[in-house]
Amino acid sequence: MFENQSERVEDYNPREIPIISEEFLQFLKQRRSIRWFKNKKIDKETFDKLFEAAYYSSSAQNAQDVEFVVLDEKLDDFMHLAYDIIKVEEEEFFRIKQFGEYLRGEGDYKNHPLLWEGSQMILSFSKSPANAIIANTRLELLAYTMGLGGFYSLFTLKADELGHDRLTEFFPEIDSDKHMYSAFIIGYPRVKYRRTVPHKKIDVHFK
Figure 1 (cartoon, rainbow, N blue to C red):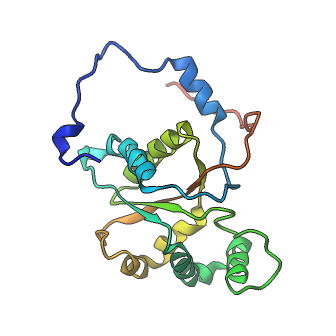
Figure 2 (figure 1 turned 45 degrees about the vertical axis):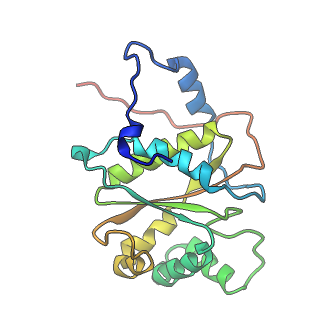
Figure 3 (figure 1 turned 180 degrees about the horizontal axis):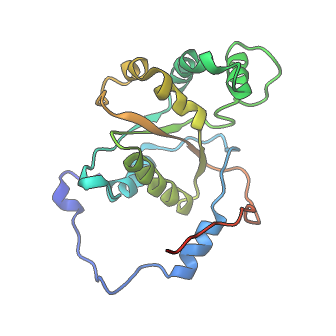
C-alpha cells in the first residue's frame, strides 16, 4: 500500500476514458449476486486493492468519512452478536428466526441463513448512508473485475438499526457516531451465470 497520500496522486489524460460505455454497460448487465463460494479466503493484498476503489469514491461535502471492517476470524462472534440484537424481530421475519435456529444447531440447515457459503464480510461505516453505500458499490464493482463476487445482507444491517450502541462496542476502533450502512459478503464464486436477471421496467419521469 501507499506510504503517504501524495503517492496516490497521479496524472491522466482527461480526454481519454479508459473504458467505453458499451463495455461498461455490458459489465453491469453481467453483475449477479453471488451466494455460493469456493473454499478459498481473500488475502490482505487483494483486500488492499479493493479498498483503492473505495478510496477514490465520492462523498457528500467531500467528507471522506467511510470506515471499513473486514470480518474474517471474528465473523462468527459478530454474527452471534448480530442475532442477539435482531432476535427481537424474529417473529416478524422468518429469516431472522432461521438465523437463530442455525446458530443454536436446530433444524436441518445446509447453509447459513444470512451468510450462505460466505466466510468473509466487509462492513461499511459512515455518518451518511449514501457515502457508505457508494464507496462499497465501487469496491464491489472492482471485485467483479478481479474474479470475486458477493451479496449484500440487509438483515445484518438491522443490528445497527436496533442496537447501535451494543454494535459499536464490538468495533471500538470505529467512530461511534458512524453507522453501519453496508454489509457485503464477499468471496470467490463457485458458480457462473450465463444470463442476466429479469428486471422490472424502470419508471423515468422528465419534467
